[in-house]
Image 1 (tube, rainbow, N blue to C red):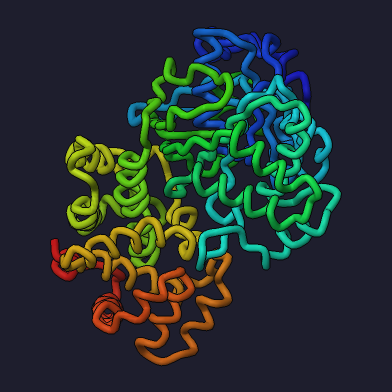
Image 2 (cartoon, rainbow, N blue to C red; image 1 turned 180 degrees about the vertical axis):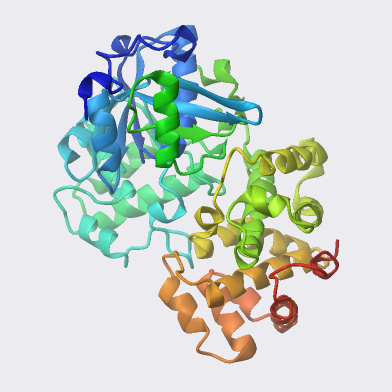
Length: 487
């Protein structure tokens, strides 16, 4: 590759002014650490941080850490952390360079540097985006899964922690020596994610057997904040075609190009322990309690996505927009959201009708190309918060939940017939189908961490009936689906 034509600080400036970073990357230094330098962070929090820096200053650069693959490091390292973001507007794409990532690390290869950054008083915020499975939770109790091999190795004293929780614990242990307060803000689709991450870090420290463990736990309780957050922007996996389009727009090759939808949302609990960028200047919401926003997003948007993914894949669809062009796409979303919206707190004052209308518009944006396979992965970790939590709420209130029963049937069919099953519990999900009839469905619910629902014979029978109805529809959700969902 001709490096003269590759995006970097040396080549920055040839593109149009509207495509340049709004803040000079050379003025930034690592003041934030982000664990999980994937496409979502680069299309979301990194953009908010850059906007805050451009308007208020502070030198807010991000040290981004890739957890597994070196591909992001190999792409962004030679580019000085620069990359392009293309927003897929319905009337055409808009591409610009983002310059807030000032250092790119790999967790396994740069462990000492990572620990040093978390310990540095100049770093005041750590954010994380590692998906639900990256936190290594025990699906039964919700705490740290100490039986996980990677967690076990970290607890045994691995020189370089392989898990995000282990990396945080090691960094906080080193930071305690300086006494500088810190905020750790998870940016994943977990309910009450700040509280969850605080617990996981505490579980790790308690299990590590460190001589200073008790003192470290006391210091964390007093000096480290774990604000909960809600994040939202659809960010499809970038393709080679996306990289070529970015190159055409910039006149420079960008191996780290990302794309996203125009819509973006970031809601943060206003509970930080140290200085932070003024993200609200870029449209973020700082609120006393993120729970109402969190439930609306998890249950309406993410829940709808999962349902469309399992129904759409069976029907031969490839993208979310494909499902919205079927006769059943919009009715399914409206039926599902109508049922699940009853579990949201009306006192929160959220306009769920307008929110659902915005979802339908976002889902129909064909420029996004959001692949159903990406949404369908890790279902055993996603559906507990997206579907099982509202299902419990509805049943506790004596209300029927026919759409959620049908959703669980669609997921069950996917675990049985979905070909390559991309799920950390794939072996257990497949093993469930070695049992006959309703026993298989009970095993699936057990695997998803819902033993009490697995023991509910009425619910299991209803899921079984919905599954049989879906099986009778060779088109995979055509025809009478709307009626079967109760729309």
